[in-house]
Length: 195
Image 1 (tube, rainbow, N blue to C red):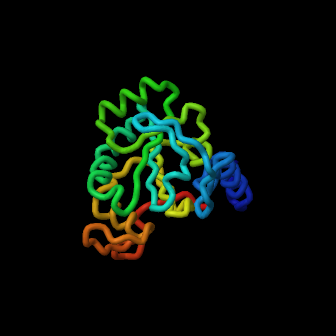
Image 2: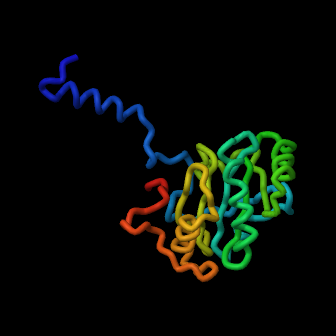
């Protein structure tokens, strides 16, 4: 194929873009950034069953994981440290497992000593609602239940940049820090799925 006239190149580029998924594509039934999470019931792993609405009133960090997910394992220690330092005071943290098997999810919770409330989503309803088409997924929700941001991939959630990001989104002051959710050049540190 010759690309001299630009038409061939344009067609080739259009084809490549049509088969490449973009960050703006939503999972069917997904609650987008800026929308309110629906009222759903959560099945407890290491905590009683509860409605997601029961977590409203304080900002909420939802970490979606699976026992087989290596990046989920990598970030879990930072989630635990974040919970031990800040959760419950200024915001809450919950975990949601997308494991098919309850025993594997319970083993993961025990292995990592997860003291934060964890739920299991065996029917994958929450996976669809949250847009967890890849893991780990961390969803930041305000006190009224509105999704502020979604972050895909493993992250050290207790490092200074992450704390600044959380602080900026939740409009909190964490342990005397007053950081901005941008670095010195003004570039946003964390990527979120665009609407």
